[in-house]
Image 1 (tube, rainbow, N blue to C red):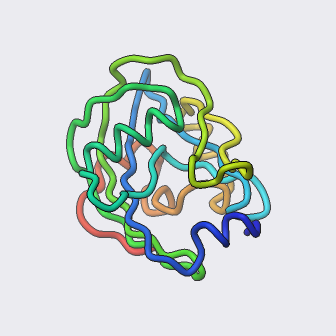
Image 2: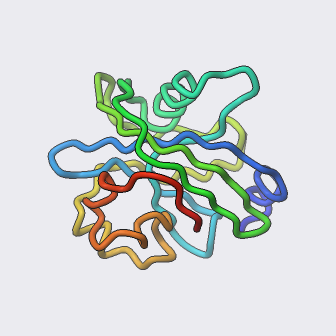
Length: 157
C-alpha cells in the first residue's frame, strides 16, 4: 500500500457507495494504484460525506471518476471489508449510464497523489483473467463475474 493511500484511508472506517454499471455485457471498472503492489480493479464508487445522501454520493462519485451521468436502479448488496489498516462498509447499487462520455477522472481526496489509473468497461472474461489480488474481493464470491448481479445480502471480505 502506498503512503498516500495509507495516510488518506488507513485506520479509518469508511462508508463507500459503489455502482455496478453494465453496458453491452461489460462492467464498468476503475483501475487504482497504491492499493497493493500492482493494478487493482473495482467498480466505481467512493466515500459518503457527512450530510450527503447515498444517491448524491453515488452520482458524484461516478461523475468524478468516470465523467458519466447515471441513474440509480436498485440496491444489490452490502460488503464489509476489513483488511487493516483498511476498513470499509460498501453499499453496492445497480446503476444505468444516462449520459456523459467515459473518461478517466480523479479522486479529490488524493490531491496530487492520484490513484485512478484508468476506467473501462471490462468483459466478464477480462475480469476472470485478473488475478484475485488484482480485482475487488466481491468477485471471489461468485462462480463467474456476471453473477455479481445475483448477489443479495451482507458479505464479509
